[in-house]
Amino acid sequence: MKNQLLNPVFLVSAIIVGILVIIGAVNPSGFGAVASTLFDFTTTNFGWFYLIAVFVFVFFLFALAISKYGKIRLGPPDSRPEYPFFTWIGMLFSAGFGAGLVFWGVAEPMSHFFNTPFADLEAQTEEAARVAMGYAFFHWGVSQWSVFAIVGLLIAFLQFRKNRDGLISTAVEPVVGKNKGIKHTIDSLAVIATVMGIATSLGLGILQMNGGLNAVFNVPNSIWVQLVITGVLLALYLTSSSTGLDKGIKWLSNLNLGLCLLLLAFVFIAGPTVFILNTFTLGLGDYFANYITYSLRLTPYKGGTWLQDWTIFYWAWAIAWSPFVGAFVARVSRGRTIREFVVGVLIVPPLIACLWIATFGGTALNSDLMNGTNIAEVVNSDLTLALFETYNYLPMTDILSILSIALIATFLITSADSATYILASMTAEGSLVPPLIAKMVWGVLMAAIAAVLLVAGGLDALQTASLVSALPFAVILFIFMYAFMKMIRHEPIPQRKLKQPKKKES
Image (tube, rainbow, N blue to C red; front, side):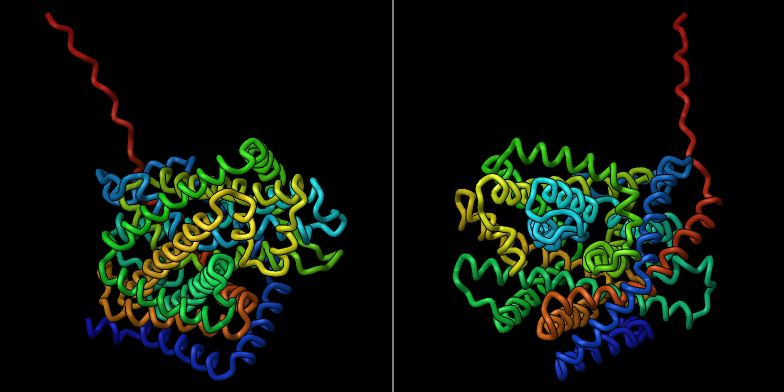
């Protein structure tokens, strides 16, 4: 254990994150200003790279799934899935979306409805509502999950098929070699990107919890309340983390998915059910029809920052998350075939996300369009109130709000718990049973970064932090694809067993 904690990746990444925490605590406004400058630089100069990268990842994964390599198992040839399908999907959903979807499920379509993605599209019209829903589906669809799947696929293949460690550097060894300096640099970069990505989601969830407590119990919407929430969540996810993967995370993941389905079913029935179904169907149609256009859309002739604020931010956020979510997806996908993995990861969670957005976002859109409410205006002034403002026009408002606050809390605990496990593993030489002290260290540092970002500038600072750390890791993902194809070509392809004809009885 001592040697694991003294390895260069743990020391370097922990020191760098610790320094960022100190700088942010001493000079929060300066920290926020630097993050904002870096955000502008990366989105202006490298937005095109994020768009092309994610577009390529999607086609690579689907081509792999339908190829002969799709039959290969992420484990020994005779292995079978470690977790039941429902539990597996619950773990994927909790780690990959978590509180982010609860935050943006209403906030995003209503934001696009109020400030449209296209300059010539009139806001708060039926056409604006349709475009808003289609773009929300696009942002939470297969593109985001393709980033997680690339990382998860290669790590699962190495860990369970080749009995190697689950380090990011090990995954790129076929391309960059075994130079220790390069390997430690790549692993440290992955750790820092993960910390910034999870801190972003942790901060978003804390902001929304504060908004919910304000809506239900009139708790002040202030930085001090947010810091108290951060402290409480820290204590809870460190407690969960100490119980191990098969207890805390597994139990909470099932609770998350069950609570999600409960809220989803209630709003679907109590809300405008037919409108939701129509919105979901039309939204899927618009998603497929506009997929290529939206995937490669930029505005070099018209200018504007809408794409930087939304699509490019989402892709960068996903890339920053990918070392953590990918490693976690790998850890819970042992025994599945590559085809099962790709279809499960790229289809099921995005479908659940689109249904969630159609149900909650569709309910809000219907309320504004048909009943003359002003949810979009409230969302424009305070994103954290989006979900709770929508509940004001549904029965059992307070109960829904309290359940949603509980759901956000359990999502945050699950995501942070998962992240402490993955970070500890990444900084303990890829151990599947990392030392508890390493999980504690990363748990505290994640909460500290989230707190610093909240003080430094709230939502804007949270968004910029994830973007900056994602750029170098996007390059590593291309190396992942090349490395995977180099290795998979040498794998034996499972052959279907032919049934022997029955012998006729004499």
